[in-house]
Image (cartoon, rainbow, N blue to C red):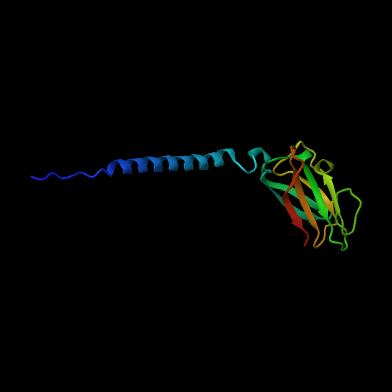
Length: 156
């Protein structure tokens, strides 16, 4: 009777399987670490608040109303108005008009007089806003001083 030789490939496939398992585990751990620690991106505290504003051009000026989202600390908000150079001259509330220029004020200089701007709060933020003029509500990061536009209105 003849003996059959058994193949010894079993040990090699176990080693390859173990290596693949370690590699897959490392890849999953890396992806999870990037997501949890936000490597290479902004930290959670650096992100601007998510907020919605509704705008209405009234006889008193452009009224901005917090329409939804997170509250904004009033001292971290600026109103920036850019005039298109055509009459009427758009200007941030209480500022001297500059045709074709940009004016800015802190939200503390408007009727947003609370510590926080919350849903339902509204204030007149600009005067003389006409077609082509732009009004931006900008959130200022307290750590970096950089501003992020959280709402924009372009006159019609």
